[in-house]
Length: 117
Length: 116
Image 1 (cartoon, each protein chain N blue to C red):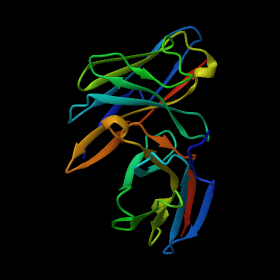
Image 2 (image 1 turned 135 degrees about the vertical axis):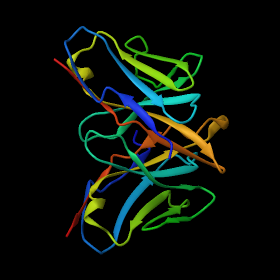
Image 3 (image 1 turned 90 degrees about the vertical axis):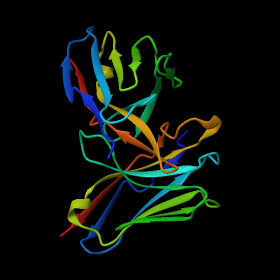
């Protein structure tokens, strides 16, 4: 099946630094990818829609200047958490959709555990 | 405003019996529903989906039922196996404006434990 790969799987960074998370579609092209965030024991919350070749669309309440999204190619989207703070510590997950046989399925990456100290 | 709700935070079932996971939604624009299985520190794994034009979809041990009038869907797993123990999320999407189904709204998740 379709595979979405996310890197790194975990990262620890100091407050004030920036962290980049990569999301790759390994065997298909994804014009649209999605970034989610999950706090402990909570649901996955959509942060933004990443569009290849254009600006990302952010959900209400998500700071676009803090969570920079770049979708420069059909197989790669990156999320950069800028000037990270401890409250940014969370589990970040990307997804990409693929349409086949009249169905649309969303496939998720493995997730990235970010800890800001 | 929680548009997709899973009111049972946990469910415990004996191996071989049926597991029934429930999900309610409030947004009548949702027309595509999915169930995901998730382990800690991993991304969700797709299980099964259903379009609003159907009321049932079956794939092996997994069956999803959709009751549009009640805005309710359920996932049945039978027979349940210990390996099914995980967190199950239901998710919904609306294909407004022809956009893809990737923009999902998730429920809070239900922790399923299947005892041997």
